[in-house]
Length: 384
Ligand code: AMP
Image (cartoon, rainbow, N blue to C red):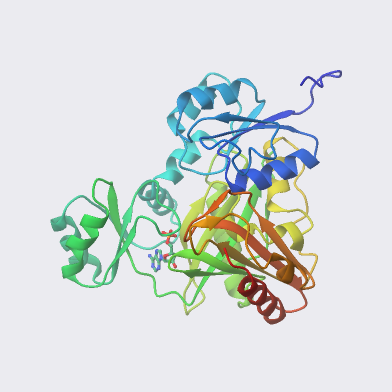
């Protein structure tokens, strides 16, 4: 398609490496705003491929499809950090416009490098140490004590690639579970709450933050997000300050998801940075003036950032994770859809599997309690 009757003032064609649910929701926003969108994904009719103008079949790390995408895009972005950052770096060196910067993706996709980046900028995070052997882990226990988390450095998300070491005898089990992967350990943070905040920076350097939210993880996977978080003004300020500090030190435009731990004395430590839209920001679609997805498209295409204020007093997001192998559409949808101010998003995945992110529910309302009750009720009606 060629729309160029007038000189281009901003990129028109957006390429997304990765066609999962984040790519899908980014594409839906971009299409509303008039952009042409292509995605790469190994699975035909991927969640994003179903709504994009074009899908190139290819894995997240595949050089050929990433290059093909770059050829038909004015700006490239990603729906995950486990992409081929070396290829993206080469493409940027060859003149492609990529947000966030491949340098940022290189730092973030390796959790150990991410920790080193944070400490080099004096940003609080759990203490950590690179490990390659049982002896290294024993040494780490000597230094930090127990419990410790053994974590895979790359391709690790939703707790996949994490192992908790409660006692010395767990070390060999952990190393066996995560064999053939580069590892590090970090200290266990006795947090009171888990928090997250989405931050956006556009190509002009303007930065804006979304409300601080509370996240609840079940078996290391995000289960529920409550917006705004019920925390003290001091904790809120600490979270906002630290999130801006993080993004300020990273190159490139886009939305960043910053996950944090809150301690009992209202200090905030960074758990993890995502160089992209994030599960903890899904609530913004119904609850904020500008959704995180629209904001990311605005940020990477040189548009002014949108307002991030909430339109409602409270919102709760609950993930719809697969419980069994089967169909991608849940039973019980109609019953759940009848609940007022309840929005059910399905990602168009053909098959459900235990633990697979199949969709999410957002409820908006006057209080967190009311929204939480409805979100849990809606989820209980669904079988997937
Ligand atoms: P991750 O995928 O590494 O963010 O870990 C998933 C979840 O595991 C987090 O949301 C926390 O609930 C828990 N977790 C990860 N790292 C730590 C830590 N250092 N201390 C305490 N809990 C942690």
